[in-house]
Length: 325
Image (tube, rainbow, N blue to C red; front, side, top):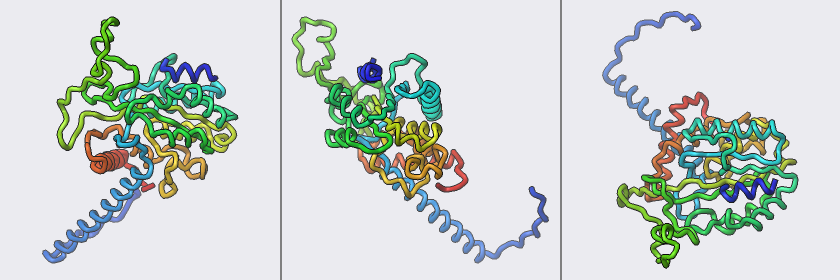
């Protein structure tokens, strides 16, 4: 199992009714009053919904420090280790299906996984060993690529049924090129001429800021790697469907492991109350679709969250959720 993980970390799924009476034309005063009442009601309902969406975003989103909320750019490959083949394949297929639904391209069998899911009866020991042996895979050294040392320690010491760690990459939204310099990653002439003496500029990213302004930036954050460790004893309290949907939620977007989502009907609560939901809910699906349909180009973090909230609201309306979660 560890060999699989190390290889993956190296980069190496009418009723009938009586006709109503003919309505009588309302008076002008009635018309004005009724219209005002309808408008007021719409404003109240819309405002409450928008507030709930924004609160959900603020609670669950976990962007890296000083960075925007990240998502996968295009391709995703799911790898599952240390589970029975049928269970592993179900998780790969389910997460890949959710990924495809939001516009991603799941990898074919044999692809190099960038979402690595490992089950273990000794989750604490496994997490500590992986971080100790492959620390650079968890903290690659580039600015804004992870949540920092304290968060990594919390990952190792977590007592949750599922713990996860994600690495993201600031990226040129126009070209997909890395927008951050990695230690030892030389670019330019030193790549084509080994005899050339590297210069400082050879180690920096080359970005042509064609789409940037004071309000918008063409630099966005894209997920690069997700590692999730399952505590076998604890995850046994939920069904394979619930587990797969939970894994889809926490691997396809950045979710705060400490988020309190008890006020919402979400798969994120499944380990607290397995009877509450069988899988992804309206809130979850709207969040996933909204994030993957958002531009994410706002420079101001508050404006970015407002833009994401508006995108989630549109997605929720489109998905036509009948009952508010």
